[in-house]
Amino acid sequence: MGERILTGIKPTGQLTLGNYIAVLKNLRKMMDRGECFIFIADLHALTLPIEPETLRQNSIDLAAFYLAAGLDPERSALFLQSSISAHAELNAIMQNYLYMGELSRMTQFKDKSSRMKENAIGLGLFSYPVLMACDIVLYDANTVPVGEDQVQHIELTRDLVNRFNNRYGKILTVPKASVTKVGKRIMSLSNPLTKMSKSDPKGDIFLKDEPMVIRKKIMSAVTDTGSEVKFDAVNKPGISNLLSIYCAMKDITIKEAEKLFVGYRYGEFKKVVADVVIEELAPFQERYRKILADKSYETALKEGAEKASKIANETLKRVKKAVGLLTID
Ligand code: TYM
Picture 1: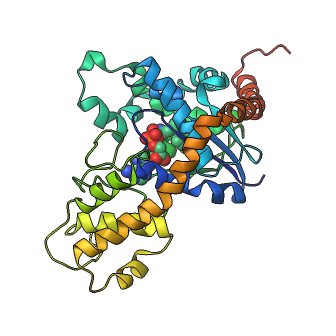
Picture 2: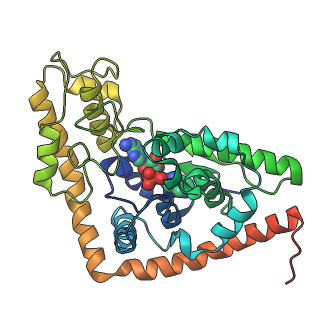
């Protein structure tokens, strides 16, 4: 089998430059490499409280962002996780093959739950990686492009697949995370020691930010003592983060960028970074607005769901049979 690529984004909060660099920016390349299944992880969005209307609107936004980034619905499948019932059905089976101990060691769960009262932590937040594993194995995906923060979940998926296959035979495909060399963990501009997430309006570049806002955020990004534009994540986390952003946008290595910026002052360097980000995001935002207006995401989601459900239902059937669930056609 050729390369099967699958990835998803949660429609929570505002999408950030981190999401863009990890997934959206690479969509065109992914479609050249293999068969792509790209989805909106809306069931996962329910693992933390969210208003119904916000979730609906975010899902539309995300579909439009995928298309604006170059996702071609003819060459790939774009779909809502919740529109393919096999995800939830497989989840009901697979939850028996991942264990409390390993789930409680997931850093994402530890991070998120540590900020919550115990009786406000939903079971879905705890079992989040089970559903995520189902998302991946349903399509026999071998490549899963993600940022660094999701790698642990994919490692757990690999454990699950191996465990399942050892017990039942070669039923599922072992997936592999694919992480970009630069920009796998974009940090907050206001605190370069924490990840850029979907919730900090000062430190995050949101994909919907106006160019002027983007420029302002980058120009006021926290930098470090010293004056050289050099990559040093420990002593220069702010500058290193901006360098990573620059390299990811230009598709060049850190070494190449360091050479370019010899003799630049921090302010001059920031200006170039802002130019590059705006240069790429402005036309992307233009396409996004056009897609929102013409609603072409509706057909894309419908056709994508048809393609995806065919494959997902086949896998589900294979798994049901393997574990001994009686299937009557
Ligand atoms: P989510 O919605 O948090 O993020 C979407 C993608 O963006 C990456 N990312 C980042 N990359 C670099 N720097 C950052 N600051 C940054 N912030 C986010 C994430 O690593 C991710 O690749 N659990 C997933 C959604 C999901 C999924 C899946 C992904 C559900 N099922 C199956 C792949 C396969 C999530 O919450 O992503």
